[in-house]
Length: 142
Image (cartoon, rainbow, N blue to C red; front, side, top):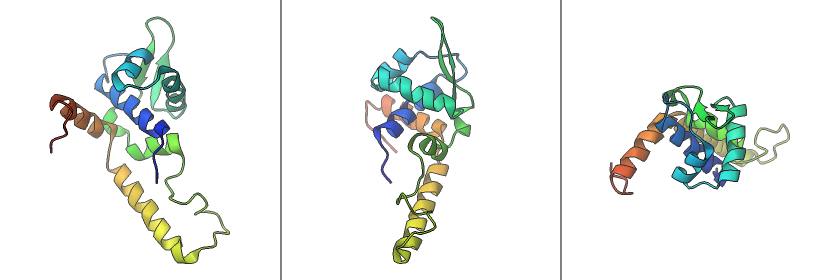
């Protein structure tokens, strides 16, 4: 599985919103600047995230975006699925006419392992890691 810029930027936007969870809305320009995401692209991603039910958007000069649910209740798997689609390593794995039975079981295991890993991580987990990374001057320390 390969995460595109869409998935990466979308997760980063949610991490930024989680840093401000419960404080009100955050404007697109602030999210874009802090996470180094081009604002026009971010606006497209925020629309997708809103339609998927992760954020709510408020229009107007005092508007912005905020998480709908607490960050510890947003699993990375659901975010990636909303932004990227299927977690399957082979696009046609679930088609009835899938031909390669020899690899079929392996691809299912890869999909299940990916699902398990992403299910075990929340946006809150990533926000904690992001704060640690920032505190350590850009170096991640375990």
